[in-house]
Length: 370
Image 1 (cartoon, rainbow, N blue to C red):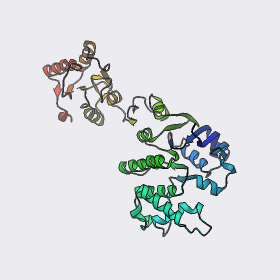
Image 2: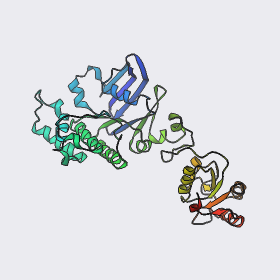
Image 3: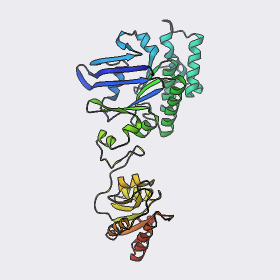
Image 4: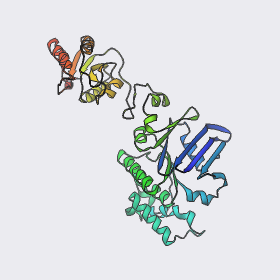
């Protein structure tokens, strides 16, 4: 059985005696990432600050390798756990190398003089996150993405077993978000770290996490694997969204669908309808679409954006029942757009829709939308 590197029992966190999140129980093993998700203000940062002892917990116990963290010295904790938090630091007259080297202070004398071993740890950390070229650059003159990597290098060279990160991808573009998380996964694997972090990007949380803790209504409402957390309508309730607005297949959210009776019918399938769905949504035009198989790549977008849908079971030919349902809806629309480019035995029923639209003069091209 794997050893629990960090764990909490009956932990309640907050400010003073006011509990923000209560009755928290969790554990993290070596080589594992636990990610906290939840709405703004739910208490994710409060939990992380309490783990780091930046806030006094209201109740409960935190253990590092079975030892009560309250019975550990500050230096002992610093050698076990490091952090990258959201607060921006602005050290004056410090290079990036100086900032990273400060991660070795728990191991130095009071004078803070680095040994040859300390310098080797700093060099290794800089290489791991790819900031060697920034060593002599003023910390105040680098980008947000570079700052995150420098702060991560600082935390790494502290040589911890536990790494705590509060929204490490905040303020970063998608390239740098992926870069930071790829570095993190590499570190977890190579250094066998135990990681606790918070993320707002649910799609990234699904991809990078081993387990996820959901914070809601003042408690750790659920803890489970990404498959367990994202496999149902739970995320919609966690963030108080319409359950059709969140696509749990891809962990992405859709904007609100246009309301009203469908004005346009989209004959679709195979993925080519998605761009038309989104265009109609942007234009505020309520639409219907079909016949789309339930295993089609565009099915998740369809059920999120269309006001009325006609679907078929996976791996089944489009049935007469589905065709007739689609024809009924289509005849009440002002126009029809066809996005299907290929026809086979499974979707041949949609050809009837196309032929009917052509004969009735309803068929238009997507670029005719205005």
